[in-house]
Length: 335
Ligand code: 2P0
Image (cartoon, rainbow, N blue to C red; front, top):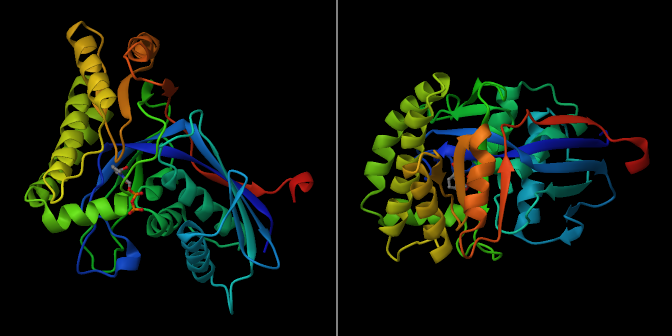
């Protein structure tokens, strides 16, 4: 086992993943719908993996020993098997740091599991394609499958019972289109309900869930075409439609799920107001209260200023399309 350092960027789904396939092995973590994302340069996780006498997981300088750590060890076991490792997996120390300009409440499981996947593949000297790495990352966390690739990525749902056609593929590179994504932070707190249980609750109780699943493929095709044609208006329409359908589906669960706070709504309205005044931006919201705004890079600063002035907004950061996940040897000084 070699000491390594891996880096992966987070991503934002422009067409959302929400819900898991049923009737297939749960450990494959297969999505009920495909998704389409932009990898974000500004939200990056760096993960170091070294041999050790006992497993230890450090996240942002803190030793973690809860279910998060269990997921990490399970993922390393999975990677050891995929690498063709014989016998029991070597014990490891994992040190992961999220280089997110604003810490609170921003998704890190995508970049976290993508970086861990790359690190384990490097450390265990696994000869795996980017496609295979992406599928393994998905088993750690669905959105992580997309963070293996830079630029714009489509994750297909697939139909095969073994998940072999659930694949992420880059559809355009980071330099395809100078877009920006503003991350409008509306609170410092953590989200109240995790995505995995939120998705299950939706599938089990939301009367809108079948409609959500049934309309996703058309959104994916429309978004991919708009992206390739660099048509912001067409892309933005799908981005907002996918986002609000997902949230409507959540709100219709029993009991309801509402991730928004008053500042979330104020920020959405500020974006729509700006658009009406000729400053085009399009909103999306994940399983949390922050608002993400897609716009052309040239318009990002003007929109950032408007959003920073919305009462309750704590911070606005600007991200642009980011690179592929990477892994390399750990520099001597850190090993
Ligand atoms: C997404 N989200 O497509 C969607 C939109 C949140 C809302 O992927 O259960 O942490 O680990 O596969 O990847 C968050 O879900 O869920 C997510 P698991 P994950 O980005």
